[in-house]
Image (tube, rainbow, N blue to C red; front, side, top):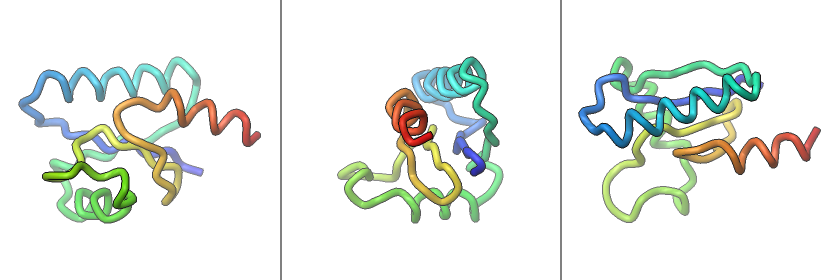
Length: 92
C-alpha cells in the first residue's frame, strides 16, 4: 500500500509546517516509503482528503488541517504517525 501524507506547502502557520516536517522525518527515519500530496496545488486532492477523513476524526469546526496520513484509501490519522506505525507493525 502506498502511504500518502497530505501536506500544505504554502501554509502560513509555523506549527503546521513543523508538524508536517516531523511526520516526514518520522517516516523517513522508520524507512517507510511515502508520497507527499500537496493540497495547495490540487483542489481535487484537497477535496479527496476532506471526504475520506472519517466524520468522528474531523474537527468540530472548519476543515481538517494537514498533515493527514492515508495508507491507500484507509485513513491513518493526522499530525503524527506514531500510533499508526505501531498498528502497522503489529499487523505484519
